[in-house]
Image 1 (tube, rainbow, N blue to C red):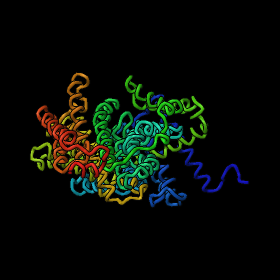
Image 2 (image 1 turned 90 degrees about the horizontal axis):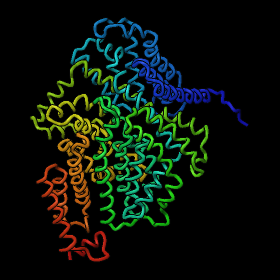
Image 3 (image 1 turned 45 degrees about the horizontal axis):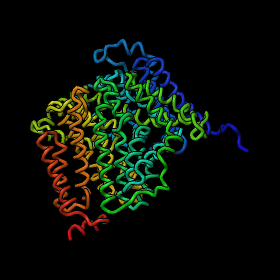
Image 4 (image 1 turned 180 degrees about the horizontal axis):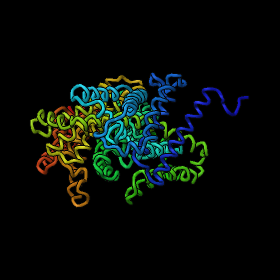
Length: 633
């Protein structure tokens, strides 16, 4: 018989980890409910908790396995010391004149320690890419921009313009509480609701499991905020279903990767970078969700049609009705679990702050789950405790990414690198907005290959977004453009993390999966260009120009459908080569804003429809390649 309390080293470490994680959540909940403390205290405490958990949980190899050794504990002390130093000397910190008063020797030692420990902690949880980027900027600041080391440390450590800057503020104020909300949603069975809801809506249609992946992944994005996490939650269910229905493994994996990636751009709860955008632009988070709504819908429309046309082309059917839950039954048994989402959305619409709304939604999860017998099984104090611990642990990667990104921003601000970089981009683009957008797109994809969405977006905003704004892009559209491509790197080979995760689950070839992901997500690469040239898609002017937004949305939706049809070679039947060319041309014309281009695009689409429906229709009952052969004959 085992002892109730494990007093071994491992048991003590596990207990300490749990208690620290729960205290981290309690502190942030208190701050939301009763008022956020002063910036240095609030952001510093947030980073203090995150660093403590990192060095306890994550080993030097980056794997969260094993127990902390002596070196881990020493590094923990070294990481905590600079933050405690700020707290102890708070009056001195806030009363000194930044960049004027010299730093003391101890100030500089602590500044160096803080910088090094943030880099090491970030490396442990998110890999080398972001720390190396930060080191490159540090080298640039010291040896190219010739910054005085004292002034650089002042910026990074002693002010709220570096490590303790806006990114870390967003992580502390927004991200943790939304991550906590996701943990509570997952523990109370909302994931099963999302899957059953998507299955009941689309499971019976052609290629039904692929469409289930689209719907469920869009919903799962509200509780994960990460493309890879979305794949790992949704994929084990949808990928086997897609393979069983006849989709090849690489296609199933590609669809899941693209659908899961879109979760970060789907309101009402988007990825962490959306909160950073709200802070950078000094707007409410609800405003960001309004901007994101139509582009997110277009993204998923394109994915949905890609699955539909591919299924029709190869003659795949949906799941048997007997295996699909009925929508009415799903809503009766689990539909009430949507209430926490409604609470958040209602609070945002009513004008409450995003953290306050997320807190209200989180507090409603357990009572809502207890409403019905079908969802209250297994709900107890342990559910609450485990959700608190999981929420804190899931937030530490973002916290360290934001702190490390703060180093980059601090150097960029101090050296004026953004101005120089803007001049370079504008020069390369030759005053052409399109070329600047393409350069920004490529930079976003490259940056996103090695780092999470949030720091990739932050670096793009610091270096590239000013250039496209200078060339005429509306400010919200420019930020959304960077946001999109920081996300889409997850499905862009050669380093496509969501593709890797999905291909692993499907046991599929990586390159084949990556190519499918690019084809399925093709609209995702075009939509950002659409809203830069047609800001009405972001509803920037609100309801004053609703008719313009509606027109742009309708034509863009038809364009996305044409794009999917052209990419996968099917509309009413399998398309011939010239029909695919017309469909792709129609897609680009409909996607581009303008009455003339819309009319030409619709005319091209009509030509293909008339040819396939009346002039060369498929043989009755024929599907897929057989239909094409029938039409040829």
